[in-house]
Image (tube, rainbow, N blue to C red; front, side):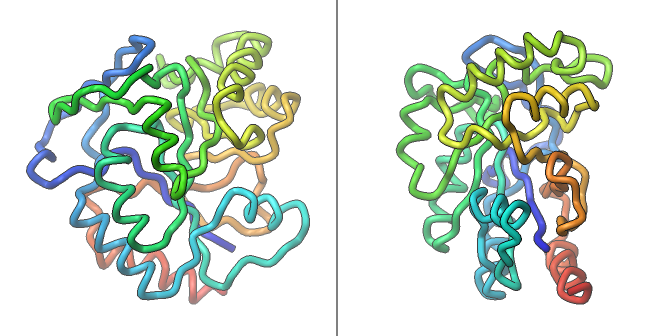
Length: 250
């Protein structure tokens, strides 16, 4: 069994004021990132230090696939660290802490959001990285599909739920031209339906991650894997308890 954690923005506490942050992405999609999707650099360091001290193994997606499809056991203490959307803070703040700890992580990439060249950093917005910047941090991060241009929402639905399966499939293929791992997906905003799953499976995807918290076991559906959002507001004691509870259930 294993837990999957999802992060979006890791920022210094001075930048975490109580308001949403507009996103700035290459294809011009307009939205805003709410404060619960941010974490502070100090909290993130404490969380990484805890996992390191407790001898947690950070999983790769290949290990997760082996667990589900080749019945390969995982290390007793395993966690999958994931980042969605590839904002600048992932490289600026998360990457050095993960590298120092010797940890691996997965980033789910919205390839249509990536800029052609690095952009200036502005604390007031959530701006995405460039393709070249992702390459610079690939010793820690592996990259998987988070759509090319389908990371959009309206009326509590993701774009894959209102577009045709053919259009969604084409978008998946477009994203896969730019990510190394082409059979693993994360649902944008956590929105999906059975048609979304059917299209993913038809396109050869074998794992997909939700934003529903919980522990992943051999009984968890591979196309509806659990992920827990780790917000700035989560006390360190509560973070640690997530893993204490997991140990009790083993």
